[in-house]
Length: 349
Ligand SMILES: *Cc1c(COP(=O)(O)O)cnc(C)c1O
Image (cartoon, rainbow, N blue to C red; front, side, top):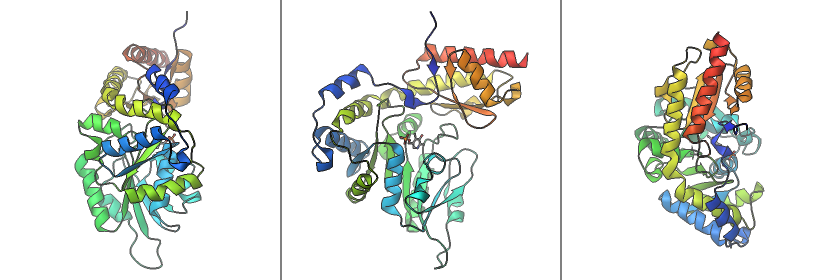
């Protein structure tokens, strides 16, 4: 009997739990475009409460949450400062330009973490013949930098100083609960300065679908018609919101386990001469490592790993990403570590 595949491509691969499926089957529903779906309303209220905000808005994806937040707080021809490896710049179909009509002004960093000094140097001077900076977009945890976490003081400082310059600050908090778990702080506390926050239910929290935007009542009232314009007005969405509520209540408490598994994987891999990785750099559930010291490129490495039942994704030609999650418990992560060891040993032999 062959063992099941260990899928570490992303924490999005988690399937709904029996508890979620039960909640979905039993969900009370209505037409959410008429604001009449009680389960969606409850999810939005609960998210706002957890984040200490006035309101929340359920959206089909994180990509739509980021775009609606940008559309609500910028005008065409303005600029949005963001990090060069960020999701909003690289993995959202250039929507901020194609749809919102704004120009991303990117800043390169080593670890995905922006600070005010670097942001300030990217702000356009206030002259009428230059495009004006409208917003700063921050990503916490930073996906492609390997799940790195913003220190709370750095995030607060960015928000305070951006506001003093009249800029809006958006948080792409797809994995903000991972950041909170790593810091041992509440999401409300670590996101308090941001004007808009987008977070995903469908990543480590384990829901099948959905994200939320949280912020002031005014922000959410602006985002709701934008969501409709983008085709994200859903009808009996309570069926999926029900799973989202379970994810929101039960998901955050078990993320520390994913982080411990990521650290375990990182320590096993860092011990291999064919792998470039500092296990100390793994702060949450994302492990990015270089397979070129063993003479492999990312595609060849991943093909060999796949033959051994383990999946990851390439970051670039040399580096590979693996993400731990609820559906890959410690035993599965141990198998993944052993498979990687085998691939790398055979390559260097
Ligand atoms: C996954 C993700 C998103 C949103 O992705 P969707 O697939 O559109 O839900 C946004 N930002 C980051 C950092 C992500 O990892």
